[in-house]
Amino acid sequence: MSEQSTEHVDIAVIGGGLAGIAAAHVATNSGFSTVHVAPSGAPDARTSALMMPSVKFMQDVGLIGEPSSLGTPLAQIRIIDATNRMLRAPETLFTAQEFNLDAFGWNFANTALSAAFRKSTPDGAPLQIRNTTLSAAQRTDGIWHLKLKDGTTLSTELVVGADGKQSKTRQIAGIATREHSYAQSALVCDLALERPIGNCSIEFHYPNGPFTLVPAAGDKANLVWIDTKENLLAAQADPERFQSALFEKSQRLFGAIEPLTKSHVFPLSALSVAKAGNNGIVLVGESAHAFPPIGAQGLNLGLRDVADLAACLALVNRQSYGWADRLVAQYAETRAHDLMRTGHFVDGLFKSLLSDLLPAQALRSVGLWALKSFKPLRKFAIEFGMGRN
Image 1: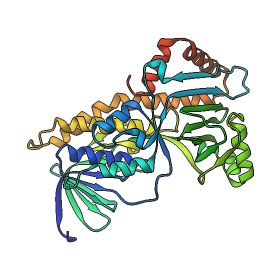
Image 2: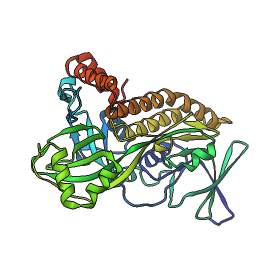
Image 3: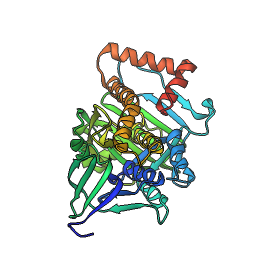
Image 4: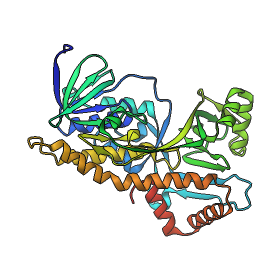
């Protein structure tokens, strides 16, 4: 396509992460001609703990096959209060079996998911992938005119913004955000354990945040360690100090621990939007919401975005004038409750873990006692965490 020519498609998806790939997939499978503007970047070294509703959605739309070929099942969740506070919570264990489940979900390497997602769209499908970024956009008479950084232009009725926390599409759509930065940062890496954790995800709750080990098959585990940036960088800088910290933070339950990959430290923040769509643009994934890695909500929520987008696309009459604006309004309304409640849940949970105030500690301790002992509340908590409530 020459620099002066303009190609028209039904939908343009902006952003190359997992939510963007999934959105491009469902748009194409719904019969819409689609361009996915997906710049190449460094491989995503993170992992994602996806609950069973997310896994089932990925299977139903053909993004993945059997999860056992890609990930590790999460059959137990163990929470250990490792603080020295006056009001400590009891150790709490959830098992999938008590809820008549084989597993709560699966833990996947993001690189494995990305490869599976990209292979899922059949040859000949009306999907184009452009290794570039969005440069500028203007809307005229219900049509978006997009200028890409490679010099090409597109016109489209609907834009799907999946371009992360710093989303340019969100800015273009005029969607307001609420943002909050936390004092804590997170360190992630892969570990080898002397004594494996099986299929149990274990959270040690410390005053500056949780130290979480997520099973990754065999003797391996994925670490998500939340603490002050200073503590994390100091541990990261000295290999011996790092291994010693891992040993102590895991309460010596798993013997010697060996880092398998380079650790990465990143700041924690929260982002929410006033609405998930406006002016011919819908937002999915971190362009619409971002949270600390607590309660396994990040990509799970992003896949729920994509699932609702797919449901809205299924109802569209593309021959009717203004279909994109009607879809955007419906999508924004559909996503509003889930985005609000999940945002409040994650923020409240994170703050309760960090609070030094006795009333907050008491409330958290009582809550975990109730989760340990009261079966209806245990069921509600698991259903909520899995995105079913």
